Image (cartoon, rainbow, N blue to C red; front, side):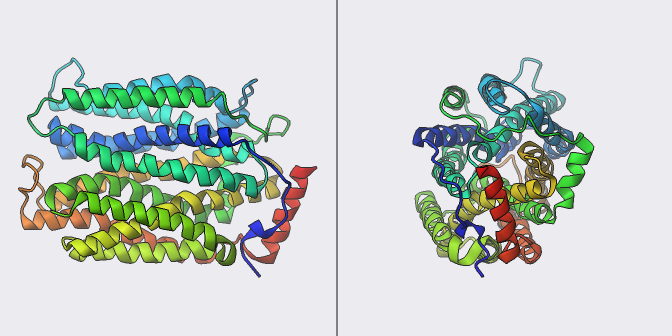
Length: 456
């Protein structure tokens, strides 16, 4: 029996193409700002350029992780209960866009209270708290919009395909743009600051105007809501959600540490950047085609397992012989395939998890699921940044040295800091998929009941 529920007949729905494009474009720009800031850019700027001690930067990320334990599920719970003529999610997207972009822009300017270690520590910490709070409000709302714009998996999948295409841009921006424009130690950062300001303004305009092109179809206002504590507990009673979170944590951790590590990688190794990113893009394009084509015959569980195993093998190879250019290019290729899987398979899997919760509880609770998901995955961002810095430092990496001047041991440390933990997490994710319950005839029947309910 095919474990993929999408073979079922679902209500015929059509989401306007402009709605898909604008939602995906807004999500892309929101993710691009976040990728530039939390995907290694902020850490690099404060430690390498401004001179903040790596240990203090690591403390910032650890403290910040505590805030995420409250921030994300709380907002998810609030957004589920929001009542507005615009819907539950759109007000946060539309009116939060300006402040989100504003904080992003001011991140790259030294605040006027000095350049001491304490001052830089405070600036990084406050900026990160403000930025992520706004990111949570906007990104969480954008994240759950496909589940509220449509009820059928076929219509949702058509939105995800557009989001994948735009997600390649949001992944490419921090990977390509930041290494090209980052200010070198001792240079004038004005050009870098102007470019970052332009990116922030453009992102604000896209996110703001996007909200006039899509709306929510599935509402929750007539349903009785649980209190926040019971809401969180019910999420963890859903076994499929627990398995999903293992994968979700892994994907966010890897995205963060890969975007941070690539900056240091190209500084220390002579791998051709154009060829490397060409392989990454080719792998992403091939991966999108592969996962869309094989989702039906293989199902979500098998696709995710294959993705994790192949990606883990590539990451392990990079740790050992990543200085060899053919190996590095092959890893970039498989990384693209893995990213494509994360962008397409993870949302499909998440939709099933939320639908199953509705089957159990009778309520649509996208917001709290997105919030609890962030509770678990946002610390992955902090841990990835802190882990990379600590591992690299253990191997003797010196931030005072210019590009290409590190010792051989420190260069090898960059590879280990970059790829070792992702390889381990991917193996754990592959094993956890053995416990994922949403497949087979039983789930097909339950999914049919949910589809029938929405059709009525």
